[in-house]
Image 1: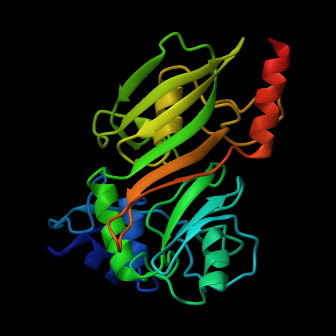
Image 2: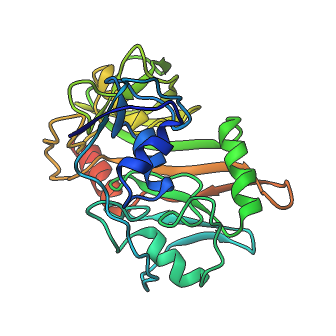
Length: 300
């Protein structure tokens, strides 16, 4: 960690850009938003006005600037037109490049297909990315091909107009047929790489409905109103029903030898950014997920 005492009053992102001259403003803003840059031990916004003597802490593991290259990779395209692309992402694929994942991401593959016709609002390493799902979460991701589409879809997400439906297999037998989890989520104070339910976190609302109960597991349909980092994984773990295979918010041990959370973004409903028409796209469960459910069915 690098500590710096503020000697002037200015925006936090501007102050940091003077300290870390090798980082772009976009990279600095992302680090602030992800909690890798703190003021007096607390997370603030990039626009936070520093006070004289404020202690600014910067994580030493600073992400490198990445040269983004198109890469020919297979894509499961669910929907495409001149404005948007909807992809069914495989488990194990990172959405966009970052520290430790310079290439082989969904963005690299989309760049190769779209040949430069992507929104630039997400920054140099996130062209077209309006929202994302975790590396080991499979399912639907919307890509914006132009800035107008990106702005429109971002507003829909911000206004909670995009309906996101997931399928999850959790450990334990849930008694309730359906319920809502309303618990604030923020970066963990014990482990900065994890998210947690904390009082100072941002509002996070998750609805779930039981689809099927097995002997020691439950299959859920999950809908989220908010899109906090790791929201579904954190919420289900917090109430005592962690997602099978989740190596961060569970012990990861399971009888199916599954690595990574059994969570699938199965359905998205939104308004087309160009026409305003309501669109629903769906992605079937991946084969490994179906195989686990078949195994559970045979054990009943």
